[in-house]
Length: 123
Image 1 (tube, rainbow, N blue to C red):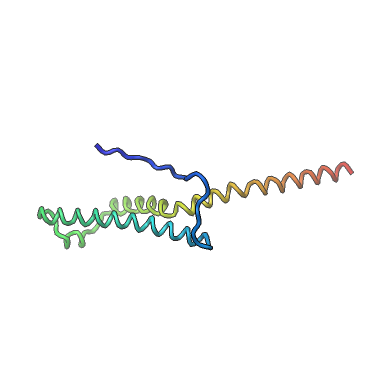
Image 2: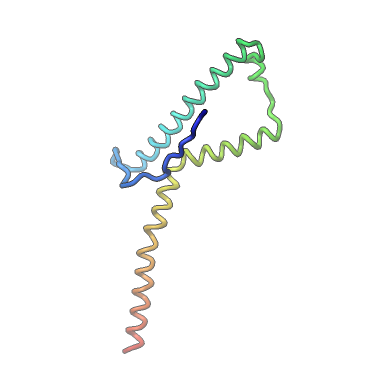
């Protein structure tokens, strides 16, 4: 029986940076995540193709000439969107953090304007 474990989506603490430009770290992180996924997928695909060919169920040329239906194409597009969301997750996490961090200065600016308006009314 296989048990799936969900990993936490956000790590505690600050993200370590290894390059002077944090954008390089982001790209390297995305690239390494993608490389790992591609490597595992390639190994699994190779295993499946070899098993199918050994059992004389399909040949590799039949796999290469396969034409997907519109349903299959839609399912693949949905999977691809989920996959890219995962690859680009670091960008999304940092965008969310930036949105959260930006609200404090905005609220402080609003409060300062309100205080100035009240002071002007009192004068």
